[in-house]
Image 1: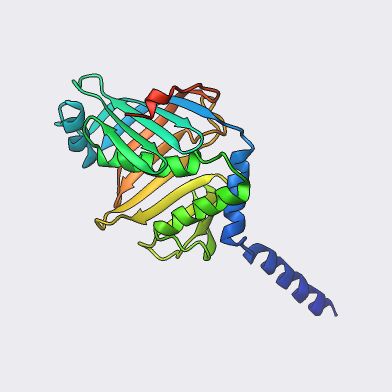
Image 2: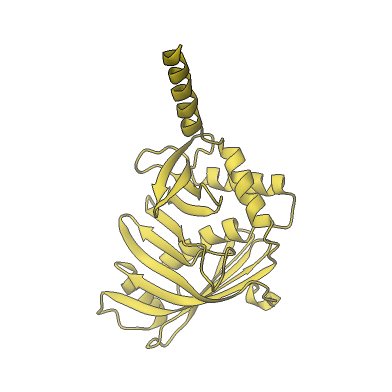
Length: 251
């Protein structure tokens, strides 16, 4: 009898550990957590660091020297719910600025393109500027977006990321599209995908405990191209109740 009881206990324990929420439930919880913040406008100022192959791209776009291992600058991120985003970039010794604007999935550039920065905006906007509708509708919108990037949202698993446990939506094989969500907080953690030019991107959302932006945004956002980090944006100052003018997002 004791052996039977012990076996049942082990099986119950294993089931509890092995159980992973379905993809739809994970996304609904994530969207619900975001919706509870009741954000309408957000302005985040921070430091910007280009490295690797992005140094030449950013230097050419911003009019700065590129004979260095990395390029440091300033960035400002604007989010206006629903679906409006803008990122402005500059460097101290540059003679130009650039801005990436995305509205309802459509991108516009002011200045020259920096591919890694465009990727940052393209993935931040649908995940952090969503809103303006019922949670179920928003969940379905995010789910469709992820599926469009090749993420199989019906497949889920667990992994560790940045010292935390995260849900992984998608095929967990290396090189497959995946969306990671921190298990305890249901906040976006990571998005991995390959674009139409066969370039592999990995966008990472790190640390939601910054005094600058709190739970509204991660303290740092990194963009990796292949196995190389090419840009990092770190929040230094934020306004979660910002009133943002229409002209920031229109031509």
